[in-house]
Image (cartoon, rainbow, N blue to C red; front, side, top):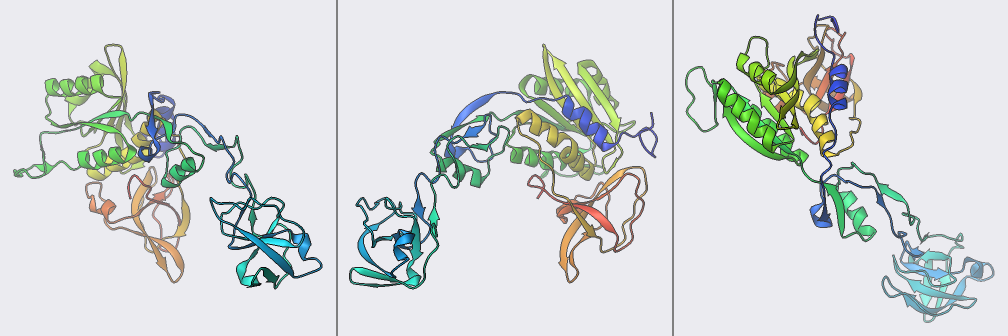
Length: 413
């Protein structure tokens, strides 16, 4: 079947649908203290048990009063003070007011606060320089949060402000999904660890470090199996170990045509794996499926060997699936339509994720290429802050043309 202009290539949207529809949340949960909940994923909806604020209070330092008392006079008797945490408990009669601080509870019967800058106080009286509107500078009970309001939904990754919101309704702990465990290794006889001598024809393994870093940002527990040689017995041992201990397995290298036949041979024996050629650039070769062992299925992602290809395919394809497995709800990425500063080379047939730089110029926000777009050059990603996404059917772009730009999200930036 031909999916696009390049025969035999599967479009990105079809690959994403196939992958995401075949994975599901691994529903292990735990309760954690609020101070340990940052970046954890909610496993239940959060409904507020209280109102916030819980009482009518002042939005200003000033004087609390009944607005109707200033219809016939501009001077009221001062009879007390109301502080946050130490409210005025007395009763106001007609013609009286109370000094009040920001956040303090409104005294019973009052409905308005006049800021102190619009008053003149003398002894036990206060003169008001303006006639206020009833309800001015008052925050009503439940104005922010009502009792029973749905605040945060299951599947949300908790941000710093979410933590504060949960604290504001009195929660000391919250129920979240347990982190998933991901097995990770690189395959290839040519790979060496950073810090080791580099023999002729060998390269340092960078893919595993990029992927492991993104997995840690996702909150995954990583079983790092290192570099596995192109040996069927060693590859099978690595896959079996990862399958036994992990919820997902990721390898880089060995999924291109004619490359590392052992990987495909081993995977064919261990599970159901699809080796795809995707209509994206960089990152055409990709493998996805499940490894089966002792009645357990473990999701598998096979990434290309080129560093940029591995990074882009992990980010665009594997990462959303891992979010689903982790219990996280997927959200739409921010995209912009902007003019590009320089010409961009492109052949029709694949969606191209070129690495770019967002810049503020005299003409406004624009995008520019980050340089050479080779799939083997990680500098093109390290020196960039966005994708310039060129659609499947699009060809080369001239300077000034409008393009789709997606700023790097939290996983890449």
